[in-house]
Length: 447
Image (cartoon, rainbow, N blue to C red):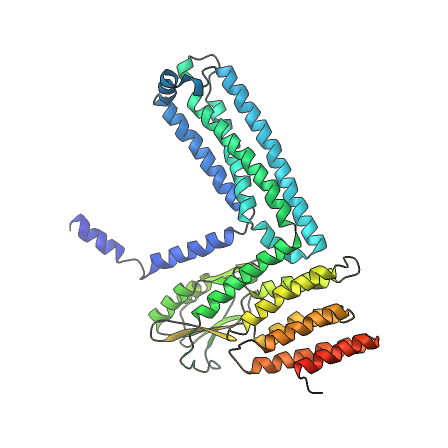
């Protein structure tokens, strides 16, 4: 048997699509890791460490000797001077890094106190802050290892002058990054920018879901008597490797219903999915491995979280301790546009191949979503006529938008009646009650 035949025979022993599943899982893991504040700094630190050894190797090939002979003004040819420069760079960068981390902690503490603790995962996952901290770490590690390689009493050609020059350039880049960091963090703490970031992430996610929905979907069979399988761990249902699950369904000639709603906290042992055909233990493990359960939530993978965050900002802004109705009014504007976009999405999501629907997924239906959003606002803001008027505009705007189901308009009317009834029972001023009555007439609400 020749090498080529042996290789083909060896590769054939692997399960079909195993490599594809492996890479899809790696993608999901890396996607989830991006939300961790230490992800990008760790990657940059490793790159800085490796780059230092690459430069040391290049130094051994004589690059500094070449630069001394041709461009001597760019190269440090004294060991003590080189060590002094690198030491100054290292101590200065450590001070900047400590200050930057302190600023991040202040940002997170202020956002948690003034707005909502739910905003913290989104702020922590800000790539700009992570990348800047990573640049600091990479430069510090680079300078440390280059400094270790310097021989103070050595010949001028033995001094890694080029590496020192690169370290100086990196330090200048760090100073520029620090200036950008101060600007960026001063913008990040402003509530308008926080709301805008949440809105853009949720809008992008909703647009993607609406775009992927098919108008004509085959009837999905009744799943009452299907085989039920349970979760083996707990955590927030954050993401799903849909491509891998479709491949598994196609390979096993079955259909799957995902039972929990994305974003919900899944407890160990609760029903997770149903299968039309009974699955063996190995296949069940493959299916479970494609559920991404985490201890945090991100708007980029779960648009419902955006509604929760904006609602909490509104409620917190109207609390006696904060007393910021202007922020509440701005947040209601963002909420209105997101709800209008949600009206274009179906309550149930299906995943299909070219010719068959294989997976059914549940999502928070519009009725439940609207209730969960407006119930806290109704409880904490019904006494403020300005907020009541703004919410009345929300209802009026939604009633004039296109909806994928006609029932959505009835749901809006019911929530409008509940909201305005509570407002009338709380507000005693006759002029304010007249305003509420005008809103009811504008919405054509029947008593």
